[in-house]
Image 1 (cartoon, rainbow, N blue to C red):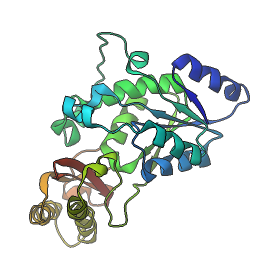
Image 2 (image 1 turned 180 degrees about the vertical axis):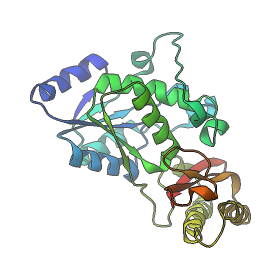
Image 3 (image 1 turned 90 degrees about the vertical axis):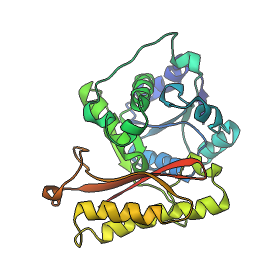
Image 4 (image 1 turned 60 degrees about the vertical axis):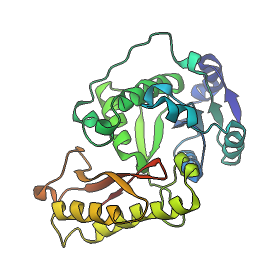
Length: 279
């Protein structure tokens, strides 16, 4: 695996592959890699000839400076994991490499930044699209892979790609879970053993919602899910909702024949966790 720290050196590494007409797949990450990230790399390897993975802790998408400060950065360990996963190129730029002083960015995301994650983390998706636009420009991939755990983020990126007519295909990859069902996340390392066990209730509740889909109204499904989560030890519920997967708008009974997705955010051990399940 080769490592590039600047956009110029990245282009130098990619140029021979472009000349040979090889397809490039891209997996953007903020590091602190786990099996979920490695599954994305593996998926990318099946879709393209060359896999580029980025590690960049993006400051513009953090609402809380303390959250940014606490974000784990085990670069040496991450590098070894990517080598073992047969990633071809790691792009690991500095903040100064990716951002100029007093840089401004705004992309009209419509309702996507006024609901769920957008509502609870104002400005977050502006930061996400800002850095991804820069990374897409640096890598110029044919395909970019994202995990389903961040489903709303995927819809935001899809919106940006369509709106700006970027020449790449997006691939949504299944959520990878721990043995108890907890969605893999870099934040999970901050959970205590008890908190990790308590957090497993989130996936169980999502599964129950799916099982009850044709037995209850959508409003009842959400009410019952919130009640189940709030009744579970150690869990504080931020939201639980059922949305249309295509348009990412709140679903009502008229949407029953459409693809639906249940999404939730909870707090356990002072750690914010999100998850979702296609219904």
